[in-house]
Length: 257
Ligand SMILES: Nc1ncnc2c1ncn2[C@@H]1O[C@H](COP(=O)(O)OP(=O)(O)OP(=O)(O)O)[C@@H](O)[C@H]1O
Ligand SMILES: [Mg+2]
Image (tube, rainbow, N blue to C red):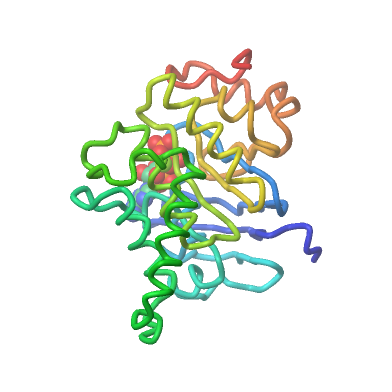
């Protein structure tokens, strides 16, 4: 087992009452890369994510994180190890300000260290760190805005900031650009690229131009099984992949980039 890979699954399988949603998946996520999981609707992408974050238990197979077998870890242990999924743990509070939302996330990361809260100096540090994170996602100017008033794309940027507040080693993003207009898609695309600079990102993404432009490696799932894994240039030429995408209206793999 090499430590080049931050996350690996071995024959990961999930069966729902006889229906195999994830079928012996061997996933190899290289440290420091952006790894995209794609596939037609119902291919098992979200189920895979749910298995990785321990939202559900695998029927069989194993999951390794930094070489450790984490198959039987509880969700809280997974988070403590540094695997954080955006849009799940980091749901934002609509009636708090943008800055307050990041502070809440930072506080969650710091946990229940009571002494921390007694010191004014540490609260100042918390605010400074929250502003740093807002700067990273280009929301500095919106620090005092009530979150509900943010545009959809900026809300998603805030969710990424709150996820980063948890200081993830591996960040999981399930369809980060879903439901966005072109401009917001591009903003989030650039943001993912930026936050991936010093961590690993595993994402499910339907937008093929996003995948083609930022993913180092792509895993294609079909009916729960891995159809192909490799860089976009290879995967997009794979006849089985082209075949799997034919007739699918919302996805266009060939010629997207
Ligand atoms: N709790 C469950 N019980 C039974 N079947 C399930 C359950 N969760 C998922 N499935 C089935 O497993 C298959 C894979 O679903 P999953 O949500 O993982 O697909 P997906 O690749 O994320 O699809 P999409 O692109 O539509 O988000 C689907 O056929 C789905 O109906
Ligand atoms: Mg899904």
